[in-house]
Every structure is written in C-alpha cells, then in structure tokens.
Image (cartoon, rainbow, N blue to C red; front, side, top):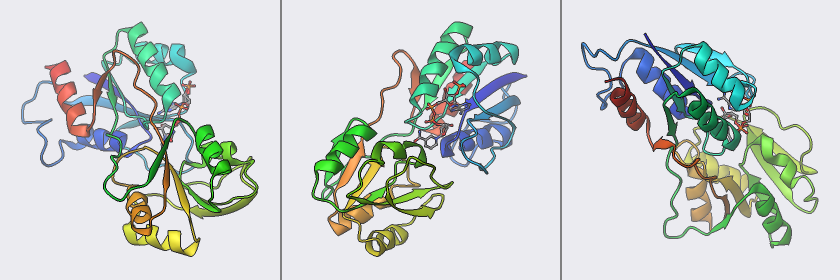
Length: 262
Ligand code: NAP
C-alpha cells in the first residue's frame, strides 16, 4: 500500500486527507472505481501548536521531526511514497525543511499552497515584507486601534508599540511578549462579513494587519475593511523553494498524486 505523508495544520491539508481516506469530494475524479493507485495509507502531520486541533481522518502524528534531517529519516523509516507539504503559506521553515528532506530521501514532493488574495477596487492595502516591517509602519502611522490578525505566534513584533491599542484574534490565548494595550477574541474561522463588520465597529478599528494567507475562511475582514474605508497592512508571502512542484488546490494535489501513482 502506498504511503502519503501530508504536512498539515491547514484546511487544505485536512480536506486532502478527507479526500484520500474517504473518497474524492464531489466534482473531482481522484478515486474512480477500480483505480489501482488506491487504497492509500495516509498520515497527516501536525506541529502541535493548537491545544485542540480539528483532527484529519487517517493516521495522525503530532510534533516536529527534528529539522530536515529528522524529516528525511521519518520518510525513509515509514516508507513514504509521496510527500505533500500542505502547511500554511507562511510556514516557511517547515516548507524549506520539506524541500531538503524530500531531495535527500528521493521522495516526490508537492507544495499545496492556496492562492494569495488579490486586491479589488476600493481596497487600500499597504504591502510589507514582514511582521517587523508591518510594526514599523504602524509605529509611524496615524492609527490608534489595530485589528491584528497575524496569529498569536507573531505578537512579539508588535509588543513595543505602547501607543497603539490592539485587538488580537486567535484560537488559543496569546502568550507574552504581547502589546501592552491588548483586547483578545478567542475564535476559529471561518468568519462572516457581518461578524467582521461588527468587530471593526465595536473596537473602533482604524487599521487591519494581516498576512496574505489566501483562502475563503478569513477573507471577510478584507471586505469589511474595504466597506469601512479602513487600510489593510498586508504581509507578503515568502516564496516557495526553487524547483518544488506546486498545486493551488486540493483537486490539483489529487491530480498530482494520481499521475505519480499511475
Ligand atoms: P514553521 O515556522 O515553518 O515551522 C517551525 C517548526 O515547526 C518546523 O521546523 C517543524 O519542526 C515544526 N512544524 C511545522 N509544521 C509542522 C507540521 N505540519 N508537522 C510537524 N512539524 C511541524 O511553522 P509555523 O509557521 O509555526 O506553523 C506551524 C503549524 O501551524 C503548521 O502546521 C502550519 O500549517 C500551521 N499554521 C501556521 C500558520 C502561520 O501563519 N504560520 C497559520 C495557520 C496554521 P521540526 O524542525 O522539529 O520538524
């Protein structure tokens, strides 16, 4: 039985595991009757950052591998036939490790990364290269109240901005170092436009900070900011390692696997 390892922690990682374990979702053709490529052994890997993650079907392992060498060892020991890096577009270290480990162990690798967001008429985006650059822009800007949606792991970059009041939304409570003036909302996407409008209004937000995560689950904040005429500080994505094959959707990843295992 062929073994697929999915580096997950994302909606796409979970959807891919669901499609491979339970059969293809409507509209895709990954698992027709009598397909010799199936059944598969499917393992999803989670970093262990979230206290109570939504578990994908199939086998699940939790925690780091111990760098690229550790991942390469794991791929060999567990006889992995294909590696799918479905981690978040900003999980830069894991993506780099996956590329190194796949090359070292000669396991085919696909980077599954959802497309980034594209501005539309009425958007006021300020593009920056990093969280530190976003913090520098806030420090020099005219704003008072920030909706910071970059996740609790990156809060340290904003911890010195004492003048500003931050609204932070995360799955688990933020840990220090955090900004001094901090309101916290514990929640997990998807988020609705109505909900985002209400948050912006309730906390009198005048600037939103986000990473270009892409996808539909957290896109409503951009529409709410546009409607309210609020600027968005948008952190650009890190690049995919050179030479790594990519797919922008679960359907694309299923097609890649089908070709690999044909
Ligand atoms: P990262 O900075 O790229 O990775 C740091 C280390 O965490 C890696 O070197 C690896 O440890 C471990 N790791 C990361 N993803 C892993 C996985 N799927 N399975 C096993 N180990 C993993 O990663 P990150 O940005 O902190 O993201 C961690 C997890 O949260 C990922 O699963 C990602 O998909 C998810 N996530 C991230 C974001 C974000 O904004 N960055 C947002 C939503 C979800 P070793 O070197 O020991 O192997």
